[in-house]
Amino acid sequence: MDGVKTLTPKQRINLVNKLKLTGKAKPTRRVIIPKPGTTETRPLGIPTINDRALQALVKLALEPEWEAKFEPNSYGFRPGRSCHDAIRAIFDSISKKAKYVLDADIAKCFDRIDHKALLSKIHTYPTLSRQLKMWLKAGYCVENELFPTNEGTPQGGVISPLLANIALHGMEERIKQYAETIKGYKRDNRNALSLIRYADDFVIIHEDFNVVKKCLEIIAEWLYDMGVELKPSQTKITHSLIEMDGNVGVEFLGFDVQQHKVGNYRAASNGHFKLGFNTLINPSKAKGKTHLAKIAEVIDTQKTAPQAALISKLNPRIRGW
Image (cartoon, rainbow, N blue to C red; front, side):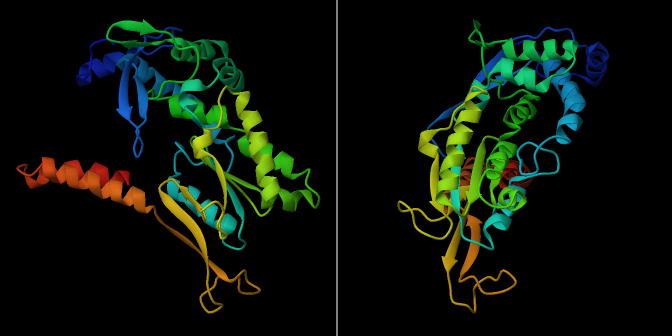
């Protein structure tokens, strides 16, 4: 928006000295990118360099406070955590007992978060709260035309992933509260019900189908208060071992998580007896094909490039997997 793409070292130092919470923000530049693996697109809002730098500074201030509060099974956009940690949490939840799994996706989460509910949840001091509000309300430009943003946090902003995590904080505790109402010991019931979230994708795991179904209703109601809703086409209940509607297990974050019946010799154990099944986690075949196709595309377009240039193009693709 400001026409500035890069800064010299001297300009960066000058920018640092000017960074202040002014309560002002410039509109973002809207860029549309394809959503991997689908025909859908994702809108990115690219802030100015000044806003990006100030957002990074505010993130440094807010993140430690919220890292101390965030729930244990939230893994997306958090320092020291990755999708592999989320997959490990799923394995730990089902490895000793076959269970039902609610696989859910929040529809356009970043675009629809309620500003008032989010700012109320952050509950910071007035100067910072005003700055956050201005970033949320700054709007975006497409071909020099300004559009307002009355909801959501712009994807592309440095602070947006943290704001999204703050908005979704409390989901796990909400279903744990429900678990305490189930007949039995409260502590055992809380431990038996799992919600594992990576950004706006999450799974809920329990051995009782009716409990999982009730959790779907509870979470849908909880999300409504934050201005977002579940995507029906991406929300389904499956079982880790038994086929349901043609599905067994769950595909989550590019991995297939399934259990298979095997003989006692090969079966997993819970420490007391054989379970009769094994839990297998493998990269999704569909995601694998897409990944290889992208690598092949890079190689095809870099046939005449030097080896070092080809490697520099391939490494981000490979690491991204």
